[in-house]
Length: 276
Image 1: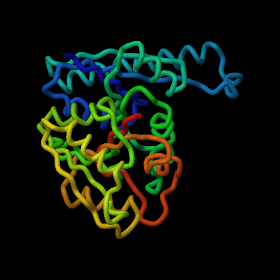
Image 2: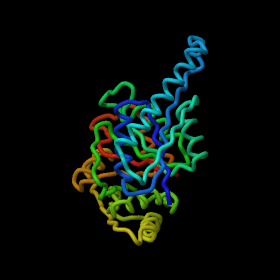
Image 3: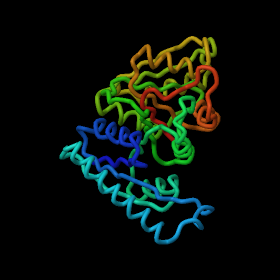
């Protein structure tokens, strides 16, 4: 089966790094990569632009996309891969949603850096909006200067309070299939024993991951969740962090706070966000 990967780009180094990561991640897979750029301009500022200038902006963006496609093909030189370009006048969220539906996209891969480049910012504003608005496709976020490592360790934090469907777990299993990765299920011990609901959800996880190399890890509660997840990533040499983004969970908290207090959670490794 040919995978379909959507790569939004603003032609920055950060976006190019995410593209390179995607090409290396799917090195052995048959893939079509869709390079998408949005030339969206706020209605409030449209009056300052003439039609001629707007057309020039689109032509420049189209040329940049074509140059990027050529660069990706020459850099990649992989017969398993082919490329398509998408130029949109819609805002990024709308452009992504339409592309996902039209081309039946399996995964979006993008960079993290915001316009400010501030170290204390969790994600750039575009990335946060994408995470919180895309409801039908997982997003893999690649840190700005991250160099590709074969992902052989995937972390999946959970409190077992929620039942995960096979559809929600499928992106994690597909990632694990690429390099026979181990799935490390992390739980912070906020209670002495799991309740009946948590036990049920844990057993369901075991069933869904039956044919995969997985393990359960119980972390003592000694700090905030951001700190404990960071420590877990370091201690087990995790290569990708995966979480389901559902209402009132940890993901919602950190994506709605532009600055993370105290230690803060910074995206040091690729981070896959799965919509519920």
